[in-house]
Length: 113
Length: 113
Image (tube, chains in turn yellow, blue):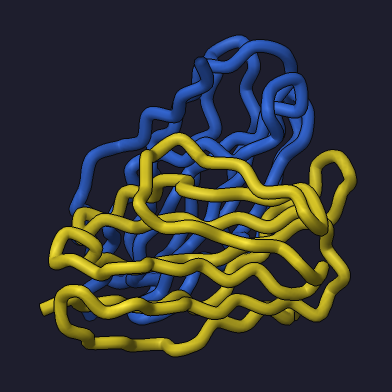
């Protein structure tokens, strides 16, 4: 059973607000990822990290930022939310070994009004 | 670059029907292949995986065989249940690349009693 948590599960917020989506894992995984999922289901990698103080942008350009100060914690921040940011955000982690799958959190469904 | 092409959905089947969801891939090197499942309102869960050619992954009655000659990893189940209704994602992880998961677009499966 994977131990990766995301809060909040659901968030409705007004335009211009700053928000932080939390992601934590208790498995000691070095590698962590953020995906944005379309209403049409497609998943897009927006950020990833190979360890503490390592962050990289993913395949899909995003106005969000991430930080990795502790191994277990990988928060995602939007400085000024817009309706175009409305989406499902999924966090994942994996061990630093070949062939190991990514474990996913339950997701945060964000709606920006 | 790497890519995964997945059977278009949605797919609707009657309970106890045979299921096939097609997945083909393009990648350099020797990727690992995965099927993930997403139940309503949840994150992704690993369903099965295969790490080398001719490997068969299996779980919960689902199977998929890594076919290098046809670059395919089709998902099959002999007798589906209503509880199998979900979105299914085929994915690859190329360890000669950037170690990120490349996902297909997802196939929504609905099983009717």
